Image (cartoon, rainbow, N blue to C red; front, side, top):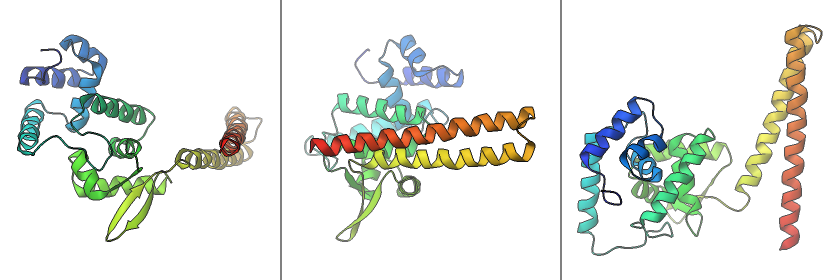
Length: 233
């Protein structure tokens, strides 16, 4: 029923809809469920390519048993109540937005958890528990995020913590601006090689000029934003 837990039949409908290439909104409309419920269900059970109705149903039952075995609802180290459905819906939606922008799903889920913590930091064990995934999955995703300067590692006693801060997106945007500069230079070299009077050369020259302009504008915008934030402090 709407608002209750998904039934096995509903999960089978979700699996069928994914196999047919339907989006979360279309599936949700068929089941008369919120799209966020479908998104969360699929995200927690392997993603669109790995979702299986029977496996998802068993996993949900197992989570329910573990929840009942707990002494009482509690707050995790993540800074929000882990049995809060509204927060879970928001987290699933936030992660989907990151995935839509091209971020791999596990990286998106980790970034979402970090953004929803008051401290902005979690250990590997906390991420494994919160996301219900393997340590290897967390390690691989964290390594990729660190390379992109989206998080940093800090040593906390005997444990390693993964952290974000207020400058995370500022640094990332500057990295994108630098990447645009590199692509612009590559496009210009291609234009020179082919000759700017040829159709292919002219195309590459236009790409180079656009990327050069884009990189400059991105760098200027984030610098202005950074200065604006600094002046407000």
